[in-house]
Length: 255
Ligand code: GLP
View 1 (cartoon, rainbow, N blue to C red):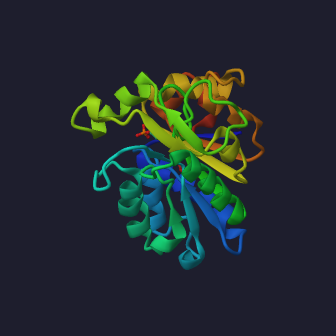
View 2 (view 1 turned 90 degrees about the vertical axis):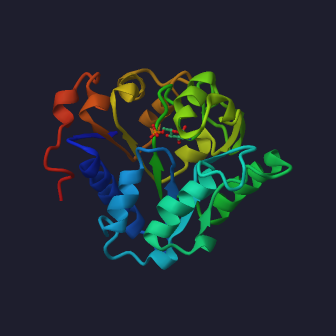
């Protein structure tokens, strides 16, 4: 695991974009795994400025989102398909036909989840996966207890996750109770993974993920077993780490 502590959102986004871009440039038809949530937004901003992907032909880029709410209105601004459309497809000028999001509106969400898993396989897997992290250590919507070998499936959201995401809805009762998410095993299949986290609310999860035991209690801790993971943090998210002082990079990612 490589860990970087940056001095603010812009350098987090740029550092992450450099690492991801390096992984994407190695492939002829690269596949990017995209994440919603507020933390990854700076990465899309950096990509939109050309950072990390200067010489990449974006018309060849295929993108797969991590997760989607089940049973959210089609036109709800927080439906992840709409977030991805707004924040990624439009900002980067991608062909919408090359961008996939799990189908949370399907009348058979289990079958839709299985289809999504196959679509990722058929595209040759994910070359570079972006991850945020929940306050309870979830990755995608893989809540504590998610099996390490889980694949794309329908899950129920914990009260903690629904409360954390209530800020995006009028009221907590409007936060969906279920989601379709790539599994922990699906995520671990990505060739390169970059996780970003910001703010004090993530500090405990970050500590368990980096310094703790690998366990299903803190789903992101499985990343310790992945051969190519970079975790990019701000000071507040990283301050509980045993070696926090060694990870600081004021100058952004070293070229
Ligand atoms: C949601 C998403 C996760 C994301 C998390 C953290 O629950 N399903 O993929 O990592 O939010 O979001 P934020 O970065 O806004 O704290």
